[in-house]
Image (cartoon, rainbow, N blue to C red):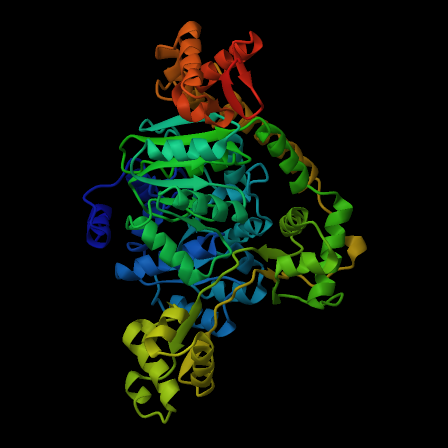
Length: 629
């Protein structure tokens, strides 16, 4: 099989490529370094997975998202494609098994977390592989001008020294021209071919709703739209509270954040994907790799810090090309909140050095110790022990990661995994107690794939099938592990810290200018661009966004709230006043109800209400509006 279209049809069932996919695939197969700028939902993974099935050696994919690489490996297995992954949360035994598969040609694709590239042991292993293609996913992470720079990505360039004749494919959903040029430079690309789809999504209407009462506005929006929805918030606590409020209002909703148990995360995703839950209220941990084409609405309850983040999250609406909405809700304090967030993301340098020292004390890592070691690191417990502010502490850990002192991974929950180490027929000759035998039978009946590879398992589900408590299940699995018939890796429920280098003395901690000072200035610039987008009252929002990404729109989009306001008939001030007076005479109304009573003319209603109150024709006690006595 030599034709890319045949490979696409055989493994994915598609009759044709999406825009720009075929061009990227052809350039990769021709051996060219290539950059692909494909918006969210543009099908980036196809551009390297198809070549991986046609090239003779392995395709190495560097990606920062552990949960995404696991999902992709599972999805590829369902299509009959063999793939493996490597990250710091693996056991050495598991990583060794995966490396053997690549070296022996039994895996076509190897997903690699960037921090693994700092390991000399892993680098030696890489040199033994036959690598036909290097892929950098989320390539903006390599640029110091990108919004999610990760220093471990800089080591990707070292792969060019190992495989000088191997083409490199860099992929990202959002990058400014400055970031694109930096990607090519940092990856030492040779005359790269650039394929960039327009960032314009004509089927999405970008709407901003200014309101001090976001809860009422959110409920109103959901009640007046159909289809699946995502509501993005910026804190785990808020995701729980808003989902509960929507449920109380009769809207099927669930919350999702990085701290959830892996099995619960999976159930939440499945319930939402299959339509049993209409609304998922989530932090930005949700969405990467989630392939649901019929999302009709994405609401940003809290504004993200950058237009790159906003574009990626909003772009999860309408992947099927049908009309959809991206609604950002903006309250008066939001601009100040975004600016304060920059200060919290860049705490004083002395504070960052202090966090490094306290972290090493907390983990009992001595000076010159910790080299290439992984430690569980519960940030909440750490902050409680030393009475530290949580947000600034996490920011300090991120800065230490960017500076290369540590690799802090905040993906809190990693699923339990298991692999059989004996043949299937040998299981039935074991002498086990009744409970352990029940656990083993539940495992064999539920997960047949354990004889071929490590498989993620749902411990709670298996315990229920075996009729035992989770504690008894865990003890039985450890017993099977001790008998060397299974290799069982219990789930990890805390984030972890990886030390690519030995601990240094605190006085030697230095944050380079490009890690701290220059990045802070860039963060302030990106924040102001986000604020401008969210607060604009005259310019087309799509034109603003495209201009930020270095593209030009020939004409206003015609579908954002500003374009609609220019074309729609606005109520006369006198008519708006008459409507408000009528509502007041009918029994009055709460001030908080103004956005709900006049959702499409909320600003005109607020202006008319102020006029009526100033003239004395209406009265308010601070909560409720009535006619003047």
